[in-house]
Image (cartoon, rainbow, N blue to C red; front, side, top):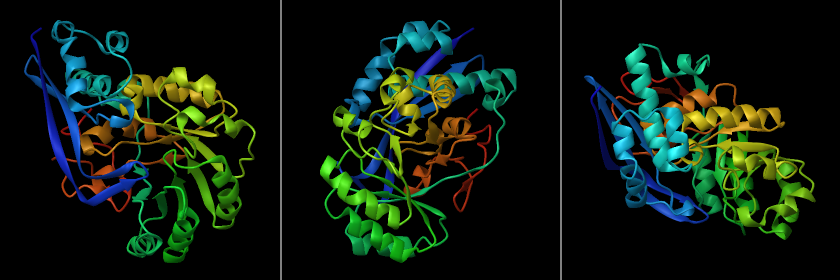
Amino acid sequence: MSRKITISSTPWPIRGAFTISRGSKTEAVVLNVYIEEDGIRAQGESVPYPRYGESVASVTQQIEAILPALESGMTRLELQDAIAPGAARFAVDAALWDLEAKKTGKRAWEIAGVSMVPATTVYTLSLAEPEKMEQDARDNQDKPVLKLKLGGQGDLARVAAVRKGHPTARIVVDANEAWSRDLYLELVPELVKLGVEMIEQPFPAADDEALRELDRPITICADESCHDRKSLPGLVGKYDMINIKLDKTGGLTEALAMKKEAEALGFEIMTGCMLGSSLAMAPAMVVAQGSKLVDLDAPLLLSKDCEPGLVFTGVEIAPPEKELWG
C-alpha cells in the first residue's frame, strides 16, 4: 500500500452575501483533503468555523500532526481517537469513506447500511431588514420550506414579512444564539400564530439552561449547543431536536453514531451544514436519510459549485454520484 495525503483550501464565492446574527460573509473558504492510494484518488471537504475557534491554518495543522499515521494506513475508526471532533476530522473522515467506497466498489451508504433516496432541503434566507426578507420570500415561491436567519430585535417583523411574501411556506427560524429569555417569551406566542414550526438555538450555548423551565410550544433545535455524542446528555430536557452537522461531529462516522443515540433519547433529527460546496454536503446526505428536517442548501447559495456537484431539482437533492463522493 502506498498512500499520499494532500491538503489544500478553496474559496467558494457566495451569491451576494450570507448574513446571520454574528456577521456577514461573501465567500466560503473550505479545507480539502485528498488521499491517493494504489491508483485511487479520494476526497473530502470541511468548513473551518471561527465560532469554534477554527481556521484553515489551525485545521491544517491538526491534520499535519497525524500525517505519518494517516500515510501509514490509519483507518476511519483509528481516526476517531486521533483528532478531536471538528472540521479537521471531518475532511479526513470523508476522504477515508470515499477511499473505502472506491476500493470496495460499494457506495458509502451501502457500507453504512443506509438506504439512500433523494432528500428535500430547506432554503435559507439571510438575515436582513423585513422588506428585503419579504422580497426574498416572494422570489422563492417554489421553495416549500424556508429557513430564516434571525438576529434579535425586529425578528417578529421579519417573520411576519416572510409569511406575507410566501403565505404557503413552511417556516423554520434560526436565531444563532441571538435571543434573550425576555425576547423568547415575547416572540414565541406570536411565532406560533405565524405558523413557525421550529426555532433553532434561541439562546447562547453557554446560557441555554433557561430552556428547561420555559414552555416550548414550538420545537426547539440545538445547534451551537450540539457537537457530538458527548453533547447529548446535557441537551435532554432543553431541546426537542438536534442539528447534526458533520463539521462539528468530525465526520460521517461519528454523525451516524450520534444520530442513532439521539433518536434513542427521543430527539428529532435535523441534518445541517456549514457554507461549503457539494463535496461537503455529499456525506451529510447519508445522515439526512429519515431526518425530520434537511438543511443542505449551501450549494444553492454559492455563485458556483464544485464539479461534478450534487444534482438539485429545485430543492430536491439526488444521491451523490460516485465521481463526486462515496
